[in-house]
Length: 246
Image 1 (cartoon, rainbow, N blue to C red):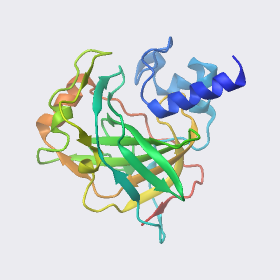
Image 2: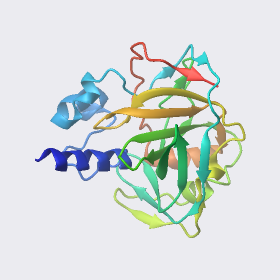
Image 3: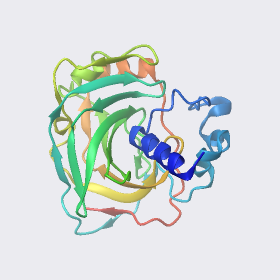
Image 4: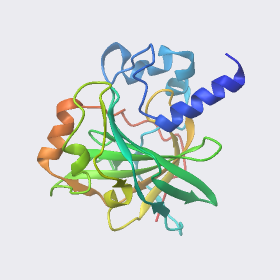
């Protein structure tokens, strides 16, 4: 494969993040094709085993810094819900942007993991929402929203209430979806450089993990776990990375 074609393929995979169901190697979260084996399943997955800035991580000893407020400009967008064989993902036609250091990252999709892949001082949450953004040159930024059991989440009800049950199934949402409605009131965050948490585990991803969790009901969490009881990659070594917080 020519370098140009390979680069385009990796950009596409980064944008989709959790979507690899159509790949001939069906990586999994357990067994012989589980996380420990990902790096050896395909040459392009090598970063999963050899990378030094892998995600997720256990966020500890984050240094308080005068970080800028997250410059989020989300908006209502047409949306399609997809069961891709690894998670449930919501693809957004025009979900808005996250501006980081003068670069616009377009919100292209969000998806779920249970339990939360990120931990904070060793604590995992019931779930996490990964909101995936890409820049014009194919770089990736993620805003992670931790989720704990509590009240029914009205914003996520259109998604969690009608999850596609079969792998490969997809359905448009009846109304436009504004991903900003998912966010907690406080946008304080942890910041670090990491990777995709699924193969090919590409590094250089800009991570912003919101400090305040949101809530979802026991029934909403159970609906997702009925499909995916566990779809979280184990935490990875920090390897001296800088972790900052607001």
